Image 1: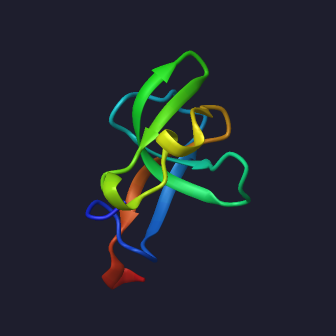
Image 2 (image 1 turned 180 degrees about the horizontal axis):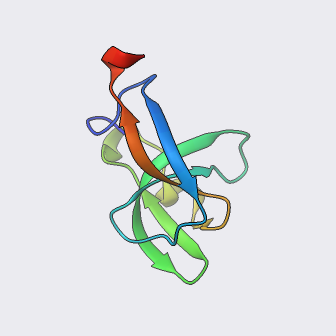
Length: 84
């Protein structure tokens, strides 16, 4: 998610918040045992499309499809690297 986020940067998120276009969200990547942080590109009911801020070098909903809003986290704080 560079330039918005940097590798190793800490995040604080809230669960149970409705997804809206433009938000940063943390969600499980379908078919993988890992979490991704992406920007919400579209919301359709209980599913959302996720996009990277750096699409040339990223895997996002173009590759893995939409994801469920339930179980995702709204990123509310990006911890500065200097504090980590």
